[in-house]
Amino acid sequence: MDNDARKIKDAKEDYAKRGSGKFTNEGAEDRLSAVPYNESTLEKHKNKKGIMVISQGDIKSYQYGYYIRGMEKLINIIKYPEIRENIDIEAIGYNDAQDININIEQLPQEVQDCKAYLEGYKKGLKINSKKR
Image (cartoon, rainbow, N blue to C red; front, side, top):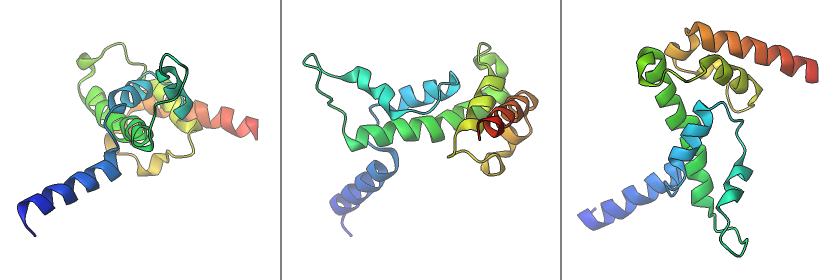
């Protein structure tokens, strides 16, 4: 495979994994702000005529930011709380318990061992079980 073909292949793989990258930071910040995952939050990016200009790649970038990049940042905040002292880790755990895409058993060990996250997660599970 020549260099140009490899670059194209790598770019396609990266796009499939991370999307356009346009909303990665927004997704990560929503996760760290304990905002429930909701693609419709991207509707605020309508153009002046009220038309959505959001592509599937943009949605994928929000998902990547929320679930992957948000988790990477959360791990760093758990390890080094001075990075972002205003983050409510318990609220993130609470919110994560409500999200069907988040399974605590599949989370990194640093998160599973975090007391504040676990307290929030357990509270979220209780609320979730009362809704059913």
